[in-house]
Length: 93
Image (cartoon, rainbow, N blue to C red):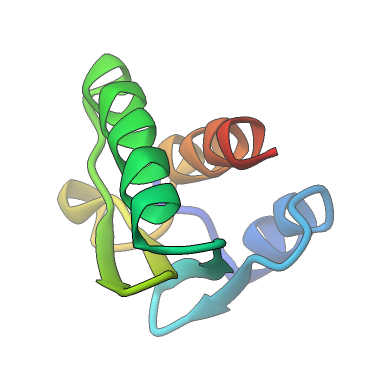
């Protein structure tokens, strides 16, 4: 998978509300009603990650979830990250 350049990433992010490029990763934070809702969403996302064979860096503190995506094999953001971000948006709704 080819690493995207900054212009390609920024163009792709125009269709992903709230996602930003930081430190060679795309990231977004989400806030949910409570820990249970957060964890349920994380579980749903985890199944999608397995399906796509692409896994995020994420951090959960109570009802907050921060997801960071990059393709380690490419040492940066690739189309795999954009595709997973789109799937995450569909899951979170």
